[in-house]
Length: 195
Image (cartoon, rainbow, N blue to C red; front, side, top):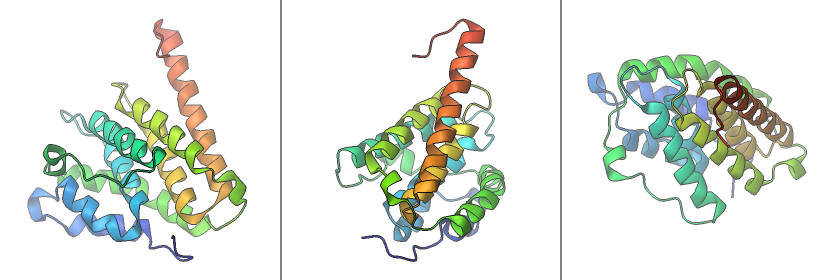
């Protein structure tokens, strides 16, 4: 049961900057720190990491795959499984974390301020999870800057589900459609079919 005043994801994510010392926290430590905000909290974290520029690190592919893997648990209503050990123990470089949070925290704070229970009929969990899965797949593709729109869509949908905000859910689905359209446009321009 989600409380009427859920914990702030923005505050929880901002607190990650103080974890792990100079080496940064592991993905598992960060996910555990966010656990008190609910099972949805890990999705914005993965979206943040997937959107952050990380030369030489396939964070977009890793985080996109994790989003798909965890969202499938939600679709089939299975208990949320722990992250794979190898990935959970992987450290988040402090610079990557700082850049990702700098990009996303202002948006997340605004979303949390605006989001509130309304038009709950539009917050269909299955539709949201399927959309999040598609966005995770797109995020995992090796497309320059191709993980930004799907990352934002995942964050918006996660906040909408937490706050029971149908308007936010509609916005998240719209952003997801735009990201699919951009991907299709890139594929058409390059003569490649992604679907």
